[in-house]
Image (cartoon, rainbow, N blue to C red):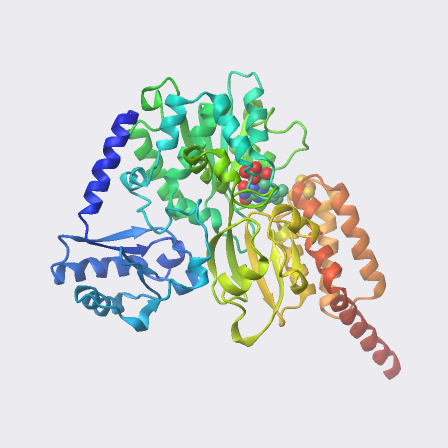
Length: 544
Ligand SMILES: Cc1cc2nc3c(=O)[nH]c(=O)nc-3n(C[C@H](O)[C@H](O)[C@H](O)COP(=O)(O)O)c2cc1C
Ligand code: SF4
């Protein structure tokens, strides 16, 4: 398809969509699907027929609308009326109301609340709006426009300049400047280069990347193709965990569609640029999200990290220069090219540009997926967008950054959420998991949970992590069971320091973080458990 044909498809699709009087958007991302949203969609199709509305109304299966705790969600467009907890049994009542131009208030989801109003969507701009299996929907939403202009109007150097100007930082965890990474790969003179999309998403409680892939897969393909053009690569891989069957299905469909339409493959859009994308499945090992382990896994080897340097940018897949970015990083690329790097850089804070997608989970009223501008106050996320803590309890801490992150206590609720501020308080942005805890959460138990995760996910290649995570978990377990002494606590602190500074890869190096941050802010909870243990021992001594 040429850029002209792309424009024509967009116009035709928009014209067809303008003839649809009402579009009933049903979320069919994994969370709502697990609550029978596919049956809701089927029931609504029958209801539209029953009321003779099927000629000018449609049921559209869309991706994630964000408020997963209220799913299945149904949004009636263009009225914007949203229904929550929709079941197939409720559809006759809802359809009757739609037919009569009314609203079933008891099932209504209030979209004027901060959960919807305070968000700013770039990555999720199409989520919940387009059918992820429909290429024309993506095209009608400006899809592949950025790729068309990149291939026909820009040089790789100009693309690199826009990405650098945007200030985008990698969304996979470390926040490495994307422009710098792309420039590094572009500069290496090599006949074969690769682009990899890291969709391994292994952090407990994280589902941001899954939602993006399930809701808007073409956006990732477009971002990767632009990256390929910018750095000089002709092949891309998406490494996605096998536990994401729906994301894989939609990605496969999107790759097939894009290839058939000439948006991937040889001579894309009639230009000399060739780019193919293949999917590689991960078997669910957390460590395979680490870039060198991921590369080994794609090469068919056991997924073990290796020391860096050399970094993948110069020595990656099969020894070739490789650009590896996270799903959300790629999801930002097309909007940056469409609107310009300066536009993106105008959103967020000085050193953290754009928006961030977070998966809100734990003790919070509105669990789900949100996208907010960088720099938003933590309090706004918890109290406004998240709707506060359930059951009248109070906020105790938020865990960000998964097993590599930390727990941020209530005293920092007014901090601005950006990469550097989170590091300053002893946590990290990570990939976007946010687990909220209330007064009933025991912070030593939280640290034990994450250490158990790291211990079981440690690949065992290096001693500090293989043995250290086991020993730290043992000590945490002893503290939780009120069997530890003050010496155990000192040993735990010492081990944290040793593992942090001697482990081979990020998994081991950051495994102590949840312990260190809970010690920093909640040491009294450790000492209370240890004092209780001493008391029990003293009592036992007194009895004998
Ligand atoms: C143990 C471990 C697991 C990781 N898992 C992921 C992951 O699931 N997804 C991801 O994008 N990055 C993950 N990373 C970070 C990657 O190694 C890499 O930095 C990232 O994919 C780069 O993309 P970005 O620059 O767009 O953030 C992980 C790192 C470590 C140490
Ligand atoms: S730090 Fe842990 S996960 Fe990383 S190489 Fe060493 S043993 Fe493996």
